[in-house]
Structures are given as structure tokens and as C-alpha cells.
Length: 116
Image (cartoon, rainbow, N blue to C red; front, side, top):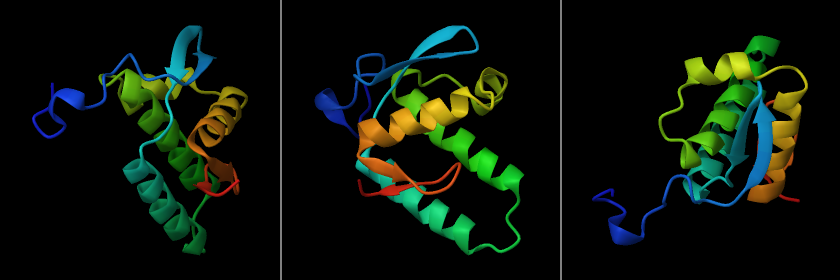
């Protein structure tokens, strides 16, 4: 148990969310915390403002969003472990599920923002 969160902190593996299969593995995408949603908004704004941002930058941001959601229930999963599980179809599905369960909306591939 985390000292910061005390006895009522989040319990990985117990956070309800949206089931998804990534690379043949069943996971539950958890809603983002409010702090995560603010960080995603901050990073998304910076990405949108960067005229030199590439499609790879947007994809990496999308992978990072999925990782943030997964790590709420699977704190040991790493970006390196997640990358080969994502493909062009399931990353879209994962981002839509995260947006829906977190009360966010999709802007562009790899970007989420508060709203409905």
C-alpha cells in the first residue's frame, strides 16, 4: 500500500473499466485519474501546438495514454511490453474506450480532451 494514498488508495487489479484484448491478452482499461486527465490535456495541447509534430509523435502519445490507463490495474506493465500488443485497430478501440470511461472526447488520433 502506498504511503501517499494511505489505506484508501487505488487498488491495482480492482479498478473497474472496459475489457479489451490486446495481442491476445485480456486487460481492463481503467478510467484515468483526474491528474492523468490534466496531464493528457497538457501534453495534447503541446502536441497540437507543435507544427513539427509527426504522425509518430501522435502514435507515441496514443500509446502513452493507453499505458496510463493500463497501469492503474497492471502497475508493472511497461511501454516496451505494451508496444507489440498494440496495432492500428486496437489502439483506436483502446483510446475510444478510455475516452468513454474517463468522460473525455477524442480530438485527433492519439489525443483526448475533457468534454463529451
